[in-house]
Image (tube, rainbow, N blue to C red; front, side, top):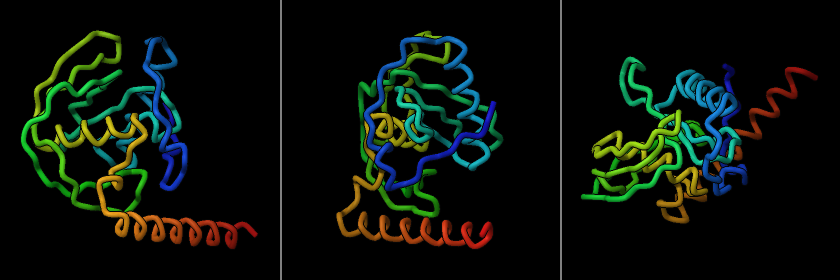
Length: 175
């Protein structure tokens, strides 16, 4: 297992629409394990393959406080949405950025587990929001797409400034 690099907005690779998973072999298993390790280290509660430059339709989630409930969703399909909830969301690809987003507060999702076995889950609250957020990633959609153009622009400028400051700091350190 390895800690993977998380792509940060406005990296255009975050907009890539992922392809379905067809091979459940060793490479996929290692990618899943590395994604859990990366997500826990970040720390986060969800991570889509697209965010670590793997353009396959899968993501990992663990919303438990003690990191004891790892979930893998491969080739997911949200088949039902019920209710609306506004929740503050963050994203590992947007360090330090949080915004209120409206999503369904209950969903039914069909997916494959890490070994290709089909399952269906009817869930709500934080897990439902997290599944929708990560599913958006594999579709090339980002949580800021739900925000006004003004808010989205502010976030882009703030992150670009952070990235410029970080690269200047690194350059100064190693010059």
